[in-house]
Amino acid sequence: MRAFDYLRAQTEGEALAAAAQDGGAFIAGGTDLMPLWKAGVAAPDRMIDIGRLPLAEVTAGDGGLMLGATARLADIADHLEVRRRHPAVAQAIEASASGQVRNMATVGGALLQRTRCAYFRSGITPCEKLEPGSGCAAVAGENRLHAIFGGGPSCVATHASDLAVALVALDAQVRLRSLAGERVLPLEALYLPAGESPTRETVLEQGEMIVVVDVPDAPGRSLYLKVRDRASFEFAVVSVAVALEVTNGRIVRARIAAGGVGTIPWRLSASEAALTGAEVGEPAYRNAAALAADGAQPLTHNGFKIELLKRTVFRALVQAGDQA
Ligand code: SF4
Image (cartoon, rainbow, N blue to C red; front, side, top):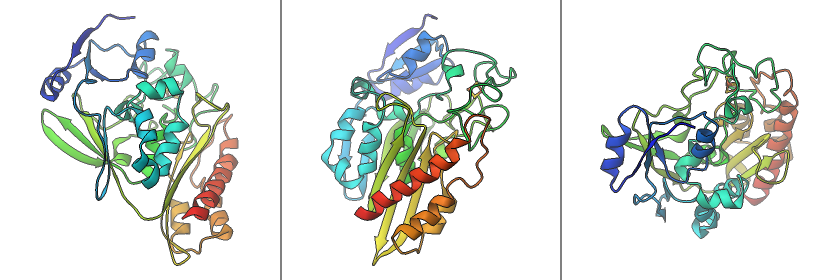
């Protein structure tokens, strides 16, 4: 384990200035960063603790929810307005990690979890993320839990976050701040597919921090469904977040994102298009589910994810459609 300097930031300006220099990393809950540091995978020179900054509010306003970057996952899942307006957010959080981790983990940290590849997390090479140019152990190795979308010969690691999948389906925006000012992005645009960019997982610049996630209100119903190898403290083998708006028995808007299958939270555009304008009911859900794996590129050990994804989409649509 490598030594690092520690700064408990008293103001946002202090945190941003410290993080603008190479080797700085933000920390709040530390539930992802500390295990990686112990494994020797993350080696920041300087940890900048933003846990005391006033960024932990969860606000339910007229147009939607505002989730502060350091709000704890457990508090968000318990928030009555979160549960009422966007059940998928609470369901995704409750399906994440363990109760102890959710008490510590924050929104910003959950969205910026490093990839879940076991080779990477154990510091095993060849791995393009750990040692650019070395290759990828998973492509020809153990890849049952790796990606069928968004990968390439250089990296096929799946995106880790349940919350990000739900928030992408809900069309959330992220507010980012740095010494250069503030910018706002759709959450979906924050992530870079590993097949194209193995060493860079997001578009965040050095010193740039997530400060708030905005989740717009939308009529209809959302739902998050996760399939995993064991009932708790486990990443998704496949997960699906669905947001449906129904008027007079027809689906007028559908957004679907999948987890456990892509190197980023993966939008199922063909399924969304098939649902839009269709009558609610099983024929439309079956049709959409059949298109869910469009463009998938399975590896040697994860071809089963194609059928599992289709079935999970169907189940999620049946459950969400019944309530929409
Ligand atoms: Fe490394 Fe990506 Fe290959 Fe995993 S899948 S070993 S993270 S390059």
